[in-house]
Length: 527
Ligand code: HEM
Image 1 (cartoon, rainbow, N blue to C red):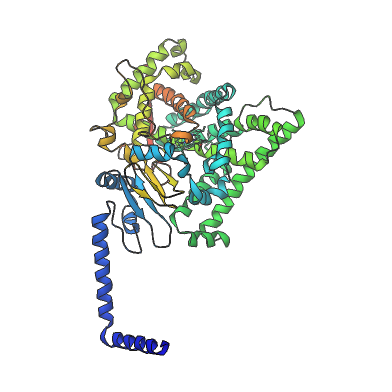
Image 2: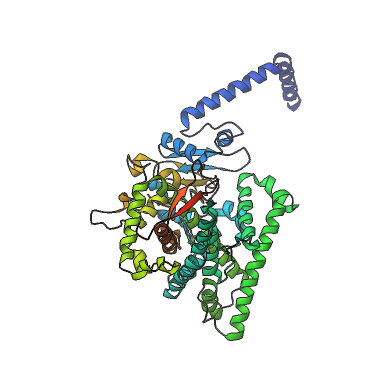
């Protein structure tokens, strides 16, 4: 019986070989390809999904205008579309800009949408188990600790003091020097230096000195920047490429390893010094930075390894490093393009400042504002929020799907898929922000009584939303106001004519070419 079947099969193969030539197979494959392309075009609302290559061709084509292109596709697709990476790359899921989906993944079914192993694996070498890279119980515990410290009046007062020291003594000294030289300069670069010094002082109790008058290259700062950028390379290539590179320490992975070593050495040394101090004195009463507060309260209760403190502080430094500087860069650019908004912001600052005798005093302390005064700057708050809406420092966020699920808009997401929500795109969708969504309009944040009105977190997830809402939001607003108010009061910030301002396609919305500006001193405060 078996031999008869075998014979039959052999003769069938003989027949096929004799009657089907190479061109028949090629035409059949081409037909299949065309059919599958037409089928996917009719059934999928997103960009073309090519067999084997998935959406890669479209991504390559739009690598330089990624955010605008994703926005267009989202609008065409009705706010959500499915994507797929190259075959075997294990990258698939949905892009969404739908507030109801965002509410579902960030709050309603939060547990089913963790950061996930995809993100964690790529950032683990740099961030370890720090809060930005943690899920589940580890994240919960870190979040609890962070909240206790960040919301304590002691840390709040200390963080304000760090800003009040840095702004007049470093930032404004530098701007004075630059004004004297008459040269244009990159404001984004200056602000990045400011926020790095500020977050390191607040989180670690150490000022790395990036804002010194000679604008030095600081190894820790440079290595931190490099380590972050190079970790992102791992998102651009499949694991079967970056993992061997890492194992054999080749190419960019070699540079990444070196940069991470520098970052970790610096942080380890800071943590070890602090522990030594705690052990010798029995307390860290004279230090109010996050690391000292955390070490004193948590370490004395139970033994927590140094690595925990290192990871914790590095996550904080990363979260608070570039976000506010990038936000301020876009804000100054928008003000230059919208002089009527600048006039209103300036009028408010001058009104609030006029109650003070400092207008007569021209030194840098003169333009420092108190927390109470900054809180009164409602229009400035609105202008900053509006700038963040149009240019969110974190333009796209990502979550992983633990179990098969259905999003509120009916899209199915499978276990292991990823949900990417596009904060940048949301601001540009009429059905979310109205017909004037593309306009820079601080007034949309102010009610008829002149009060600032916050937006629903899921319509405006600029600071994330739900249980993982950004823990540094208050700090960030305070810092942005503390910088923006005195700079605007002292100078008219003019973007150099012809300077090309475009977003850089990475996880933070930097300006690709920086922000080249000149500062024109105002004749007198209030002019
Ligand atoms: C304009 C400024 C800022 C914006 C737009 C912003 C936005 C965000 C976003 C989108 C996330 C979610 C990130 C993720 O899960 O991958 C986040 C988380 C976080 N942010 Fe901010 N942030 C800003 C400033 C800051 C500052 C200044 C600090 C620190 C002082 C900070 C500390 C954190 C921390 C610790 C988390 C993690 C929270 C968690 O996972 O539970 N942020 N922020």
